[in-house]
Image 1 (cartoon, rainbow, N blue to C red):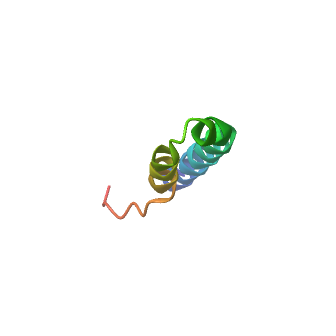
Image 2: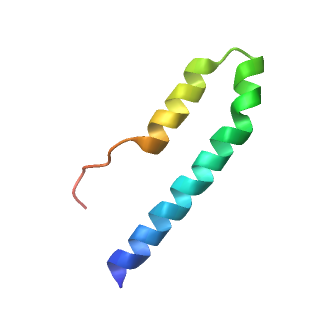
Amino acid sequence: MKIMKKMVTRVMLSSSALVLAVLLLPAFLITDQIDGFQQLVDMIFKDDETPS
């Protein structure tokens, strides 16, 4: 049950972070901060291989 809760929480957080990144894309494009957008996307999709 603990693993399921952890997995659901991780999916919810990554989904909300992805939606936030898409919503902020126009702001990144207008201000020419593409590097900031790329860092945000990399942070969302990084491989978290650290043992818990």
